[in-house]
Image (tube, protein in one colour):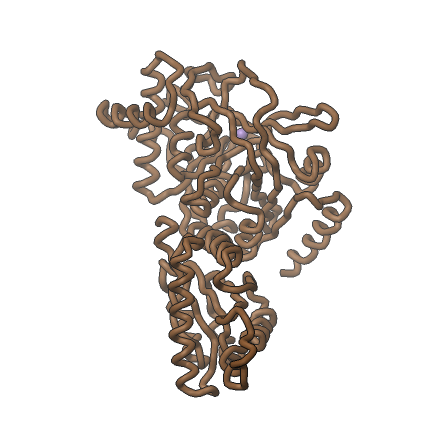
Length: 491
Ligand code: MN
């Protein structure tokens, strides 16, 4: 489901104490606020005014409806007047959707001449939102608190940003991952408890035989391949004459996509160690699938495949790009340190700085024919890299802020897509922090999704979150990880 089809329910708190006229005014204003915020263009999803809650039973029913409605990706509450919070307990205790407390006020300014006690009773968010905030704190609800004036662009954008994280929750809870082959032999960090992940994050991670994929590949028609070749021609520059090799990638892409679509899978993993019956490791095929929003993880890394799909949905409609990534090698010139990220083949062209080239080169590993792949440089800009690891008994999401640059050298003999960046706070400290936290070599790199969104997502999914940023120092990080270890054992 596209991000545009999700809704967020705007639920306003009040009570009967102030009489029907006040409640009528609240209703009109809340609807107006929803309309204006929708019209602002700052929200990726629609906000729908769902009513004013005045009793326990109203909130209980509303929570049940929100839980049941697949289009509802979360609720946003605000208290126009005072709304005694014991009446929210039953509803909140049963709420299974993301929750944002929007601490705002209908009027921007205090009207000097008009203000009297009627005005005070109608416009007492400062009072009502504190009562409302207490009960969520008391119930230990995972929540996002956004304070500010509802017509301000920056405030609307923060709500929009949280909406994207909440959609990431909805996607996660229904995500299916198709595995072709197991994880790469002997690799530890790509392993994980699939039962725990399904219980916690909702992912259904299952395997399909490579042999079945080969059968589906054999059924792909020339006409289907011709059509996809036309698409490749509009999007990419052909830097090869060997069209048969490119057509073979098209055949792989069509077959993988058919199998995923039939099963409702949004992500897949494969491994060069299990390509039985396939002539090429999918390169261009995987890259173009990622460009269409599918998640991918190399060497059987189903966790990063799923995370790539989730971040791609969270950033739908944005233009920076999101890709599967791997830390490969360093440039350790003193004071001018960089990481070079790439993969054997599979970097998503959504992060390309200009039109990618289709090239064919031999692959050093995997014992197959030279595969076609897209070669390009990643763009400059602020980004994050994200890694989900299984700590045994719990999941840890590690997010690092990075600054991508135009690669400082051409690297004309490097036959793969590449992205170069400075990790924060600096390469050396950032590297030590990443290793301290147990972050993987595989990541999702995104120019669109922010660390705040990943923190929100982790909180809503109830998993540990570690953020490596400009302020990180190793001593504090070690202390935080030690305390988190204790806290998560108690949870
Ligand atoms: Mn890899």
